[in-house]
Image (spheres, rainbow, N blue to C red):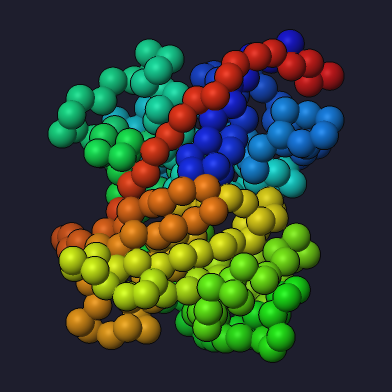
Length: 290
């Protein structure tokens, strides 16, 4: 039997498995079984809580930041490995604190190893804020086709540690009319796949210096989810890019599962972007992985 905890961030839900020494053989088949909403626990992905020193992927994290004791080993619902998860890392840190595995005083940061590099997390008014580091335009404008969308729309490629394609829609009605159960088709298709966000700017776009956007997302390896943290960040970055130089650097992103905050700020190595939002643990249990 393996102990687990169920958690979520704005409805983006995860099965959390504590495996500090990296002893568990977390195969894609086991991840799929855990995430199955009919025959398993049900989740958008699995967060394995493991020490950076216990798995090969943690070596780069420790080389970057020796204090990054814990590594977020994130798997999508289909069993594939993912570089980063913005909602997941907040839930991950919340689990560490509630389980007594780490401490995080107000005003301090906790470094967490990920496949996208070390990410610093701190407390915020809404829960937790994570510095996702530098972002970049990924180039190209692939056409996106989705069920419920009458014609293909161009998307903007943005990388925030994992790949995203952001597609602007004309109205709330278009956004509501999408069927994101089938995987949207990108042309050309990225070699590693991508999360695909469909966004509608708020009316008004900016209020009291804060930008506003609504988003739905199809996550690579998971399908449509109620929220995607890095997707919210990519959406805010894309809308700011389209809006021009006078656009704000602070955004509110409404997703089906709630609201997330995005903030862009200068750093020594270039512009960084931070994500803030809640994290909750829902229940604990045991499951027979055999």
